Image (cartoon, rainbow, N blue to C red; front, top):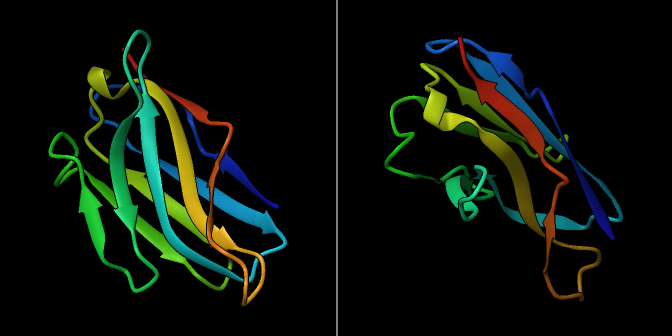
Length: 121
């Protein structure tokens, strides 16, 4: 089993910045893709950004140029640097990953419990 724990959420004024972190722990042999999703009240969960083991990234159009996803494979951690935040970025942010616990096991998908980001003056 793999556990994901997000941190770094909070309240920030419009135009401000936050950096989210998500650390994976437990029985980990290898982690493939990692990513961030968000869910605002009354809306479906949506993709924010993803990153492969090799560092290839993908972003939602709504965050391109403002958010940057990165990862530290030595720490099994993924980050989301969020700049120029807008009120519409307010949501619970979840990290996810595909991980395997041994050389011969299949990849399984995991979610973190989420961290609240509120952008308001």
